[in-house]
Length: 571
Image (tube, rainbow, N blue to C red):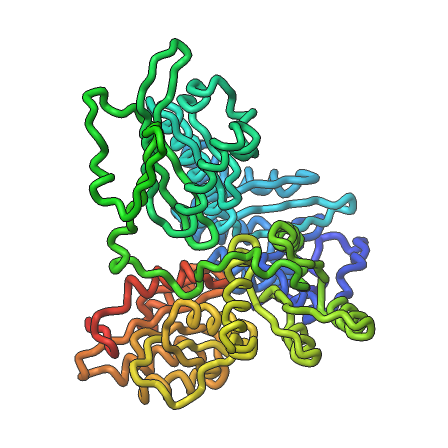
């Protein structure tokens, strides 16, 4: 419920009705609904003029205190009585009496501008933006910034972890360096710099050819590329002469780390024991190279335990440079995602540009068609409208839908996978096909999702990860498909037509009674409201995840809930 935007009763009959008081309540409610925040508007006498229904998402106050004419003090008193106490992020000032707490809040509402952040419970942060206008009217905006705070904490943790890693590497007693897939130095430790009498700034961003003689650089890069391409570890033994003229044998080991498309080369160097012994790795080598004067030896060791490693199909190891010259159009209104995507595409030789919406996309495709320019692929942000996909289909251009994270971090892998499948004869339409066939033996994942774009995103991810799945667009359909095919897991959107995800989950749980089986149901939420999480649990859901979904999120859920039984998960 929200209070109407009406003229509040005031003690002064001479007060002039504010211009905003004539706004339609329904219109203002609609504006508030489109924003993820709550609004409270009050007059110069601290009487409520308007309070949006979103206030109840933050404070379970009685609905009557949101009505026009309620004193601001009474509204704040109701907030205090809910038992929610402020846990400021800066310091705890101690327990305040009700009157002292109200006095502080009223005073903050009379400041021209005031901003504060409060911590409600252990996992929720709330921001208050307050402004008092020159005519005495005030506005408070309440928003949930929990996700932003969690990301900040994660960034801080990641930075600390990176700093710790750098400190550890710098204190290793032997030289170590890291190269990227272009064989450019991206990290060196202090021992490496001391060995070659250089600094990190002089090495980073450069290649071996810029630091060593052509012969040595060629030999280094030959083994570097072999390790990056095959995953085999390289072990080499070479003789070096120190500045004092002393000869010693050095062993270098090179390893490939990372994921397909994001491989790095890590190399370490250590002195060989002086007793004349050789390396144990040479006994396991698949190939050994020895120089004519025995000044160095190199061995390649096969990759071990490959049978225990599962490489998702979405991460196929394809060299992006093979597709250089292809023309790609990026459609996104997210400037950060656009910048990251274009930078990546240019790096790998694609011809690319970006448009900000469906109107720009339509004009661009029309001009390109008239000019005889053929586009190879459209990359569309999943936050854009369905019209963007319809335009791609209209002009016969393959399209990939990605979220912002994928565009910034996984763009080359998704594009490479698309072109690789096209080379094998699977056209772009196969990327978009949503499973609706009757071939459901061993169905693993049932997705309840009514949004067309989100259906495509789920389909891309699940096909890439190699899971057999089906899509249900209504609550009624998901219950029917569950009853017919008994999937291993259900991903349940809570806002579905016919009946919603909560009702669908309750029906599934009722149908399971007496059968001794329980299918994991995972709620898929768009907002992290505690009320929605609690309702998911009450409806019988086992867990919740947040949109936008990603391969990592779904794979984590599947590893947790999918069991050895191919059709059912037991209690």
